[in-house]
Image (cartoon, rainbow, N blue to C red; front, side):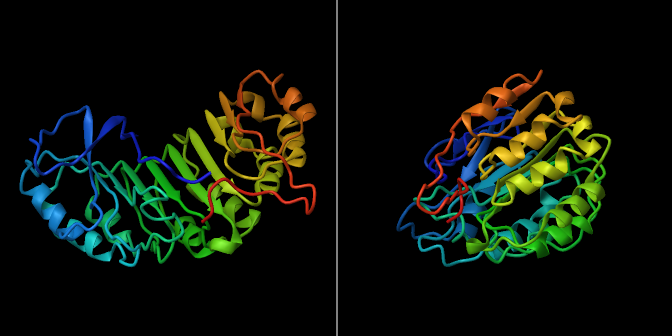
Length: 306
């Protein structure tokens, strides 16, 4: 599976594509997505400036940045710098998504990111921050009092990024979602690293923990099945990875998993027998999109990598 469609909802709002020929009206129901067309003569920074010139910047509270380069060869650095430069004029900003691109626009592991820490520092009231692509992505340890939802989507998440998050302080966090991917596309790390991450970022308000698209899904499941943090969550999301019967058995026998509301295991390699057992848990278990193991080499594949 690749990311084939642009985001349709963000910050609990409907995503609307910005069109310079149409009227622009800010509302509580929509969020604008800025994206360059193929062969667009403008740069993304020019498009952002145009958009900001047509809205009441003091009221703009959410924004999505889509495709900014035809050849996936430009980083997000100029975009980050421009938004930071306008930060004082954007006091209401609560939600940012940098990199909303489909595979046709740019494969997730080709998206050229940059150091996005300046955005987190420039917008202290930010509640939701989402970034797609970990190629050249940097995050320095940060403290953010209002950030509630943090999402990093990648085909391979480097351990350096996770270490930086582990050194960060996010006391209001309710939703932590990381796409781990595979080592072919940059993943590095271990279960121990994610144990330290969750121990550090765990808050009394944490409701959703997503360690998705993971090539170490079974190992993560074995750890989480015995970690009491799970009993405090509403949703544990291990979807898009290569979870098999080892992880399924651990989750089924966990004293904490039955306290969840939802266990998301979409895109998995669990046998029918263990699927049936998981369905008897007194919670919602998503077992959609089962995968078949390659009989020749026993291969399993995460849903999103390249």
